[in-house]
Image (tube, rainbow, N blue to C red; front, side, top):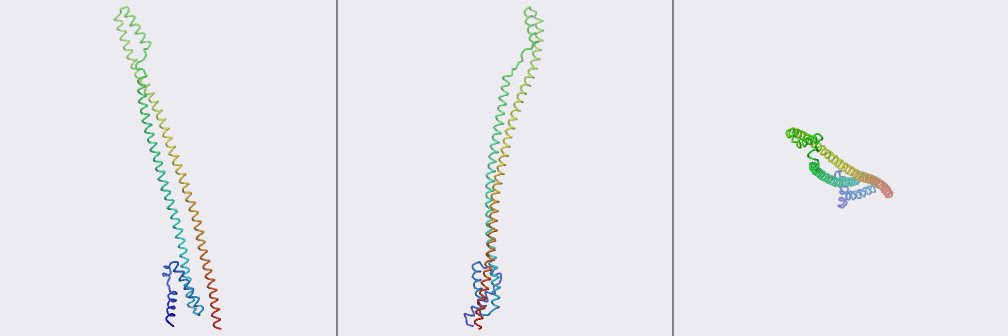
Length: 287
C-alpha cells in the first residue's frame, strides 16, 4: 500500500470513526461536506467489496443526516422563538406606550377637574358672602310698628295735647317696653330668616357641587371605559398576529419536516441505485 492509499485509508478511518459529540459540533456546511465524503466512501466500499466499511459508512451517514436534521429543526425552532419574542416585545412596548398615554390623559383630566372644583368652591364661597351682605342690607333692621304700639303712641299725643304729662310719661314707658320687646322678637326672626335664606343658598351650592362631582366621575368612568376598549382592541390585534404567526410557524415546521423526509427518501433511493450499480459493476468484474 503506497503513501497515497495509506493517507486515503487514514482519512476514511477518521471519517467513519467520528464520535457523536464531534458531529454535533459541526455546522451545516461541514455536515454537507462530511455527508458527501462518507457517501463516496460507501459507494467505493461497495464497489471494492469492503462491506464492513460500507456498513460503517451507512451508520455514519445516518448519524450525519440525523445531526443535519436536528440543525434544520433547531434553526426553525430558534427562528420561531425569535419571532415570538419580537412579537411579545412589540406588544409590551405598545402596552407601555398605551399605559403612559392613558395615565397622562387621566391625570390631566383629574387635575383639570380639581381646578374646576376649586374654582367652583371659591365662586360659591364668594357668592355666599355677597348674598349675606345683600341680605343684611335689604332685610329691614327695624320692624313696622304694631297696631298696639301705634295705639300707645296715639294716646301719648292726645295726653300731651291736654297736658296730662304724667299719664303721657306712663304710657310712654309702656310704649318703650313694647317697642323693645317687639324689636328683640323681630331681630330674632330677622336673623332666623337670613340664616334660612343662607341655608337655602348653601344647599343650592351643594347640589351644584354634587352635580359637578357627578359629571367629573361620569367623565372619569367614560375615560376608563375608553381605555379598556382601546386596550381590548390592542390585545385583540396582537392576539390575531400571534395566531397568524403560530399558523405560519406550524406550516413552516411542517414543510421543514416534509423536506427532511423527502431528502431522506431521496438519499435512500440514491443509495439503493448506487448500491445496485456498484453491485452490478462488481459482478461484471467477477465474471
